Image 1 (cartoon, rainbow, N blue to C red):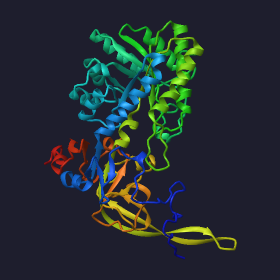
Image 2 (cartoon, rainbow, N blue to C red; image 1 turned 180 degrees about the horizontal axis):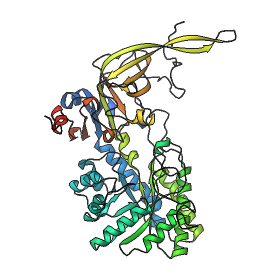
Image 3 (cartoon, rainbow, N blue to C red; image 1 turned 120 degrees about the vertical axis):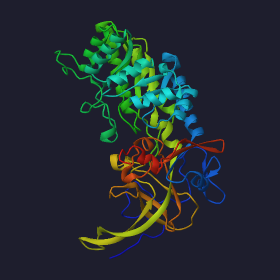
Length: 492
């Protein structure tokens, strides 16, 4: 038996959360950068520049970023947290997480907006150095830092090295001592908080690679947690300046509960270390991981709301403990850059398949198999420019960008051109029935963890990144060419 959903009727193949849009041409504002809108002719534009013009100048696939939106989100976090924490610790240091997206232009925007920069490798430190940001405004993370990376951090005079384990603490101390220097260190702790997010991006529960456990009896010293042993060890090294504590409970988090629990546990620990070892820990980094809207059902909280909620927890806890509040820092990487960017693709091959769905038989017991259509819309990129769907089962949305349409909605799956069945860009989305080869699609929310995870699978060249401000577009990362791909091939 074959059936097709009536116009504006949901397909049984769609996930429960996906509604049929009332208007396929409308843009769900939380998913898009400010300045993205449709022209009078129906084409998608950013800062007044239509996507057809961007394709003409720069080709597709293309990451399209609003510099204006990026800067505004950075300022919003800086202003909101400074206001909320003014009476607690005089304000907050906001670190942009470079791992989400990094290039020299972005580093300069970060510095100009008053933020600091968090890095996670020697390569990211190299970008920071090339951009000219002062080392004192840079942090270095990582669970397996090389000696070369530690030396580079000291060469640059980094404001903090976030130590991830007891062996790493000893290596940092030894390297700094051999250089006759003092390393500024924070200890990354795992407070045992399991954030409501994908298993692979939840980072503060015990069973994972990051951080020093706060659970007791987790070291060779009976009764001491790894976190406590690290505090005692750091205090004993003349080459270590122990700044404070750090935690990060995960990514793409909407619920506030995990942040509150983590903050309370770290403040308890901080107070205990002051009491037991007379160790002053003047700084506390509460991480980030604030979620953004990838689909219409995602509901990110505005920075001011996040800041007020976290400030209330910290204010109450330091009062309960009777301690001076440490200087607070946060790391809202994805929440700054994610929504600032969309990816522009050109449509190629389209095909429709028929999928059997078991539905209750009318007026009788048992099930009938009913066949429904699912359309595959292939684009000129794929998992090489957005690996998150295959890595994390991440959901995205898409819109027809080159024009508007009055055609009926059809459940579609946007896929890439790679030789992998899992090469899916948008698993489920309603697009107009008349989408055709040559049309442009835009996938919002691709500013974070897309370009930085891009690859050359099937020898596709990685896309460029174009930034727009005041109606002008410029490349901030050049797209690769086939010559680039062959440059490292020593047989050529």
